[in-house]
Image (cartoon, rainbow, N blue to C red; front, side, top):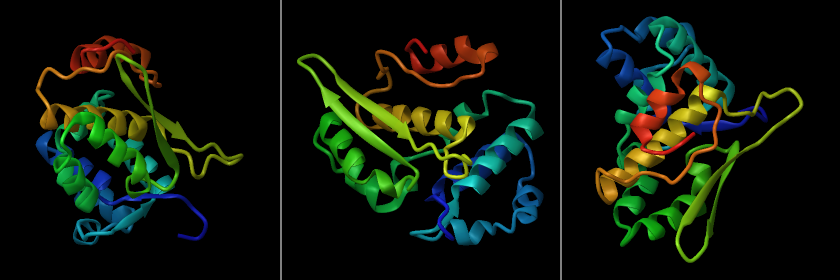
Length: 188
């Protein structure tokens, strides 16, 4: 991808589904970006992170919905991430799923790392975003939120619907913090 970072096409598939769910026709948005829905649904499809960021930002503007990452994350299932998703589903515990997620984080994006630390009581997942001088390989705020919310959704799918992280550190729109906290069950 010409030295640019990339993300798995599944992020755009989920965005596409969320836009349809909201009653918006996403074909025009995707076609302007030379993205074909058939191509991004193929196993192993990758999309430049800069294009993915742009489409997420445009979608939030188009829908006038700063909470769009919640809708997108609700369109995510473990198998959205192909083999990684199956590995997560085969995990014997959330801790095992976290270990697999950390080990194969490059499947989700080549531009960030997921780290796991543990103490006697908790496991801590950290999504470390790469920062470059031109920010071309940086995960944007909408995609970052979608990633975090998707991890929470998958944890809920794997364990129980009441799963909630203890705390989240992220860049949520200040107008929406209460809604994100209500959705995640944790403080932001």
